[in-house]
Length: 89
View 1 (cartoon, rainbow, N blue to C red):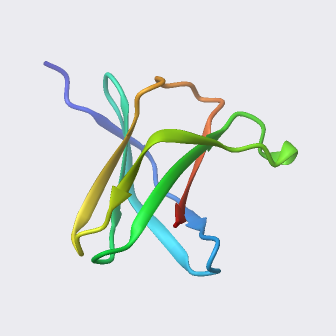
View 2: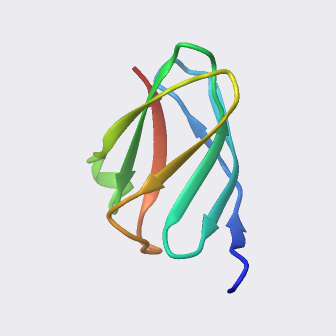
View 3: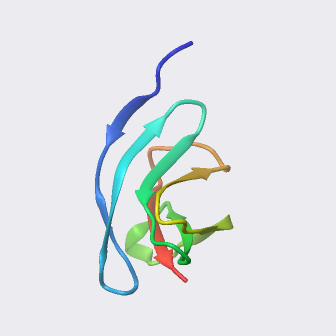
């Protein structure tokens, strides 16, 4: 079994103007975004294949923050053409 490889660490600006830092983005069989959550806050992960267009697509679920580290997965698969952001609902 191969160990997942960390390929990128970056920050995303949230709708509230705060910054959410991804601890890691890991590629294995799927993409996992790990971030620190706030208790009782809902998060919506979105992806875009064309950021300049301003078109973002919601992933199929909303995460409910628990005050700990959260993992978000992209069930649509991996492509180097995708960018991600996490919105506070």
